[in-house]
Length: 410
Ligand code: SAH
Image (cartoon, rainbow, N blue to C red):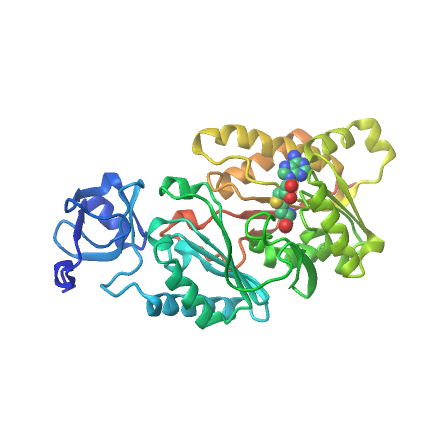
């Protein structure tokens, strides 16, 4: 029999049977509507025990009366949430990365719910760590987390980039800065990904600096690049473009609307000796594709053999999914018109609310309008340092496909 939570002396929160099933399956969030009873006077951030209606202990975690997520479970048993706890969790998260990304020196060390640490993200860029805290319970325990990270990873510096909108839902202000160690140039730290050098801005770059979730896909997509004319749309620091150039692309054109990103991608190309075959342009991809897919322009310019589409999320909410799908369809339609027969379109969707099936349907609708037939040659997901836990659907967000444009038979 599992021990009753009351044995642990923690305040007990009881939740409804229906919600208890989801939590017992591994989901760490207890929403306000799930609560059946809670002691009065609970202090925000205090560790509570969560029980089902028959007093079975589901787990323990910090309570936050300000958040719709009232409790974020951190453990299934009653254990002390202290430096040793965080050290154990970080060590086991690290073991997953060492197993699935052997040899990588920059990767996500802790991916929040995927690693039993709801509200904590830690990225490693060589010997520098960047952390993001998105929950009140972990904000209050930041010092213990920093101490545990120092013990396990022995970093040169630990920076904070807790800027996400989700902090507001927990009653927290943004927080950023140096938490430990020292770092002279956080705005241009050289790091290595798959043996290529990238310059990363740890203070102002996207996410914590770059899109580590695409690390495995850069190499996978580059397999289609040998001898190809490659168009990397939404290129940011040039992740897909530079991997394609190294894999033997004849020519790479990178497009991003951010002038800083374009400049950084050109510096990265030069740092890897790939600048001879890489160009980058500041452009709105939608406008650029629209202009280039006009019939008279297509007659003049050679088609592309490999096109990568890796746009930002088109929707943050379920309600705007139809708009997002229209956006995906349009961008694919234009890209398909620019793709050579037999060429490959590698395309990604990071909108959590658009699943792989809906994404593929939007692409098929575009193929129909473009009068082309597609052959799917690869499926992609987020890199293994962003693990998917199927009982926590929120852990899965990145999906991608590679499609070949089927050549007309004679
Ligand atoms: N492929 C990149 C990540 C892309 S993130 C990588 O692997 O690192 C999305 C990028 O799209 C950002 O760099 C952003 O500046 C750019 N962006 C957003 N909207 C855009 C638009 N309409 N046109 C061109 N670039 C855009």
